[in-house]
Image (cartoon, rainbow, N blue to C red; front, side, top):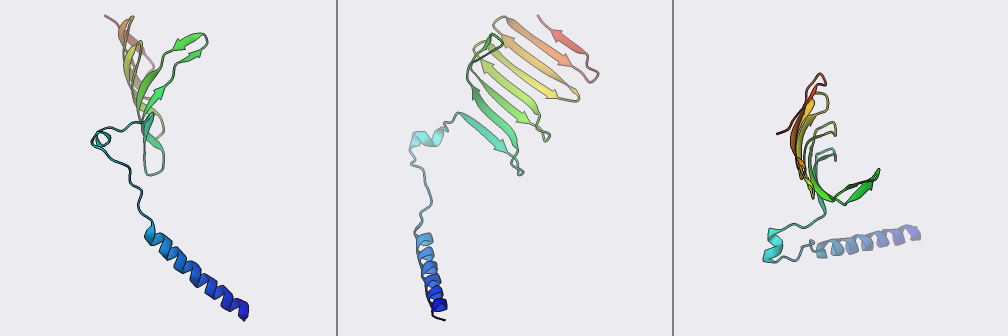
Length: 134
């Protein structure tokens, strides 16, 4: 019986302490100046849907060398469909820029502008591909 009273008293004390602590918590606020209100600075940004899947992203890619070829640093913007496939890509790096509109099962359109020249590449449903260059 005595241990029940002690447990009850401790429970009441814990509840009182919890209520005091919760009422004294101030919401986190960022320090704001006029310049900070106008700019968001980050290395990347992702927008997710209600299921937690990434549906849009803006990311920075560092320069990498793969198979002896140097790929320069760049920025990539992607819009992603419900299947997780990037349907719209817009990218830029030191060598140029490009945009790709695609549907994995239906084909794609790419518009690429590089130092060496630009081109448009189109692939349709039956797999036929055509490249247009000036």
